[in-house]
Length: 196
Image 1: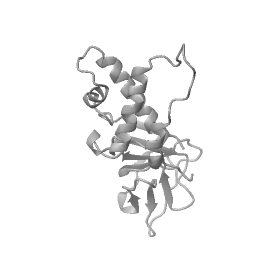
Image 2 (image 1 turned 180 degrees about the horizontal axis):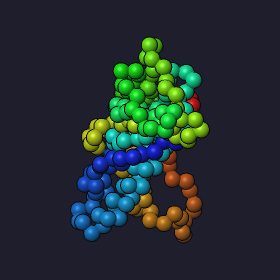
Image 3 (image 1 turned 135 degrees about the vertical axis):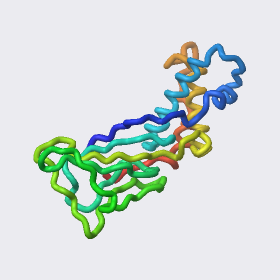
Image 4 (image 1 turned 45 degrees about the horizontal axis):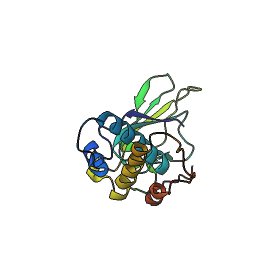
C-alpha cells in the first residue's frame, strides 16, 4: 500500500522570517543555512507526528480494491479526494464515478477514507497488475503557515534553533547530557497513530 506525495507543499509550516525573528537574526547572511535547518525541522516534525502540516497532494496505490467497502487513507487531515482510478480488466486506466463513494475528510485525529455506497460495488481490476488502484487526495491543516497550530510551529522553531545553534552532532569540552525533549512534548498531542 505505497503512499507517495505527488505535489509537495507550496510553503513550509513556518516562514523563514518567523524563524529569523525567533533566532533574533536581523541580516540575510545566513538565510540559506537557516532555510535548510527550517526544512529539516519541518520534515522531522511531520515524521514525528505522522501528519502533513501544509496541504499537499498524495497518491495511495493498492493492488486490488479491498474486500470490505472502505479504503482507509493513511493520514489524518484529509481535505478532499480528487479521484479513485483503477486499471480495468482490459488494462485501461478508468476513473471510478464519485457518485459511487463517500469521502471522510477533515478529522485531525482519524484517517480519511473512501467508503463505497451501499448501492455500488468495487469494479474488477486487471488481474495480477500491481498498483491497479490509485486514490489521489489532499491533506494538511491548510495552504499557509498561519493555519498550522501554534504549538506545532513552536516545536519546529525550537528544533531549527537547536540545529542552528549546535551545528555539529556533538559537543566537546563539556559533560555530555541529553537535549531536553521540549519539541517532542509540544508535538506529542498531535501525534497520529494509525490502526492499520
